[in-house]
Amino acid sequence: MSVAPAFASRLLTPRTVVAAATAVSALGGVAVLRALDPNAGGLWPCAFHAITGLHCPGCGLTRALHALVHGDIARAWAMNPLAMIALPLLAMMLAQWWVSRPLMPAWLSRRAHDGRWWIAALVVFGVLRNLPYAPFAWMAPG
Image (cartoon, rainbow, N blue to C red):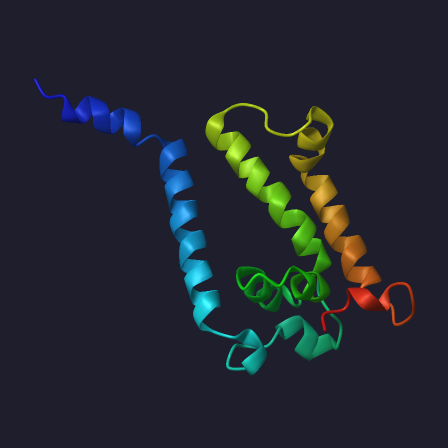
């Protein structure tokens, strides 16, 4: 009789594996963003922007994350304000799932887990950030 399989089966649950994989991926992303500067070029351009000349909801996200890992929150906000709102929500959703208990108010948790809110936010943000006049021009990355 072995204790190891019982311990391993409790430790290697799908929830723990997903949390560990997410943490390792996030740390790898932080390491890459600390080492490489997307503002210096060398990364592939946004295909949507290259084809249409418009900013997609994700335009500026790599530069925003780069600024964020270097502690420049204002620059990160200037690059992609939606990401700076969505990232804490997504982190809270992941943490809430991992610990299996509520960490957000119920009204926020319901909306955060409803994909329709995310789709609506992406569409509205994508349209508004391409309007060339105030008060929307600030949403374009730059």
